[in-house]
Image (cartoon, rainbow, N blue to C red; front, side, top):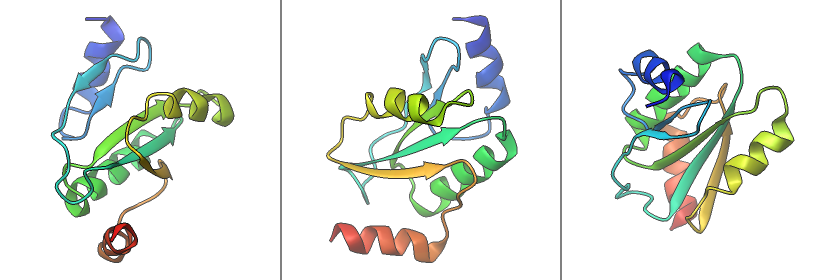
Length: 116
């Protein structure tokens, strides 16, 4: 495993969401598919705000447990980061977020109702 993978894995060890190494983009952990949103992926772009990213991941786990999550460190280039991220999405539906978002109970309910 790439050295940065190990460091990244330790940094987010408490978060149950899928994790990727910023250096080699290797998946560190895989989460089972969501029963609530099996055909959706939440895409998260982030850069230099690990506390905000952790808060978002915890809120997703609390209110949308098991939903597929893909993350991309934009390294300051949001458009390129989004392009890299979207190239990995395999589900027909996408929920686009950034690290400063937070999922709340009414947010989760609205997403589920929109999918109905």
